Image (cartoon, rainbow, N blue to C red; front, side):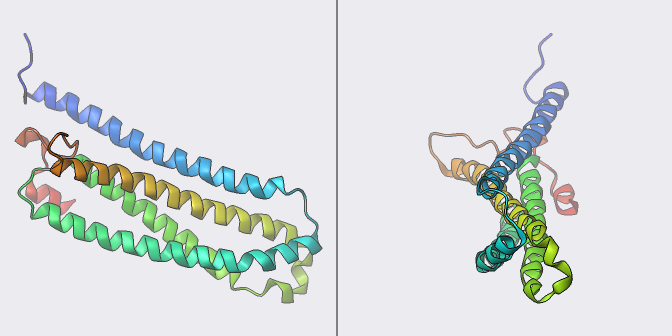
Length: 202
């Protein structure tokens, strides 16, 4: 006996495969960001071991870049969150029926945006401290330099992960209007879409 399209067994299988796909998408974005972060930090390690005097000089030269990166990341994260609100509002008022995948991607993007914003605020506060004037930490300049480099690499990796997740979601939205492609965000059967009241509650 074969399952008819839209039957409960097919929908259950679609839900399982959809959950696997969403997890794979998030893991793929995180892996991409992690590779980028390791590459950025590897460039710092490749310079070689630095002493306290060289580390203080390097910190002073890196602080303007770190401050710019943190400010840009905070602005980007807040802008992405605002655009997500607009996207969700449009999707709830749209005539299209969307799969839960769209809202799962939106949730992942929002989580990455918040993580990026928190990390960037911490980085911005850290580079605002005049460590060169604190005598008690002179022996920790090398540790602070590598910590600063690691924080910058993590922020860069989070931005890469955000870009990958947004690119995947944007491709699905573009496919909605493409005459020759089928979007993976649209529900083919009414049962695949979240009910309006469940969508609002989530």
